[in-house]
Image (cartoon, rainbow, N blue to C red):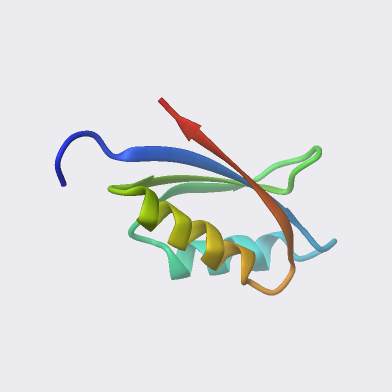
Length: 80
């Protein structure tokens, strides 16, 4: 990996009652990229911190999270 990794926070909104299940699936599926995944209260249900080496890798993680059953929507924030 040349340079610094891309750090992003993915805010995930899920179906009621599926917070723990979705968080666990995210961690299991993307454990190399996910550095933290927390259930939170408020507008979003899960905040996922990821570190990847390319925008293509970030896109793959975001697309993969969106494909998990119970995920309603996501918002991705790229940190600088």
